[in-house]
Length: 162
Image (cartoon, rainbow, N blue to C red; front, side, top):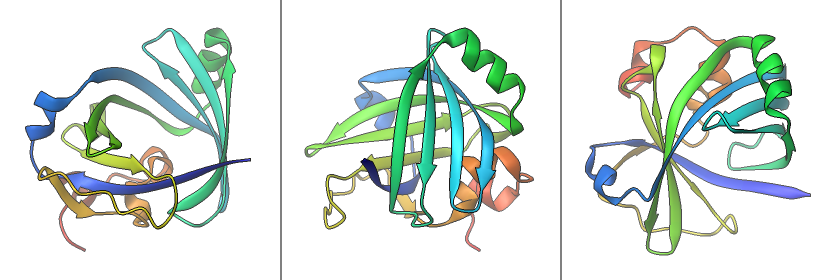
């Protein structure tokens, strides 16, 4: 069983862009949602697709299962999405032995930029790059599931305090 251990942050400025080593356009949608689990379909670069099952209520650690699927199947599933289809570009930046994934959202979420860092174990404490802003791990407003299914709130888009 795979475990996803990650922390999530708002991004304070665009300094990370000069450090990015990749950029991947992503479309993703949820096809099953429950309070403690979800099934998500995602396409990358319009050339590959994955089906992901996430189980767990802990925002730091969850069980995660990913499977490659046919792109045509993914497109059909996206058409049947619960809520909105999320569109974003995912950039990667290496910083002190950790790979940061920075999601720059498009469409209704234009301007929202979130950075995630995957950890090897819960006790990992990666050094935070200077371009990292407020931590939002556990703030469900910043989960892709909430972004796909709930009404956009301006405090989420602009990272304003509660």
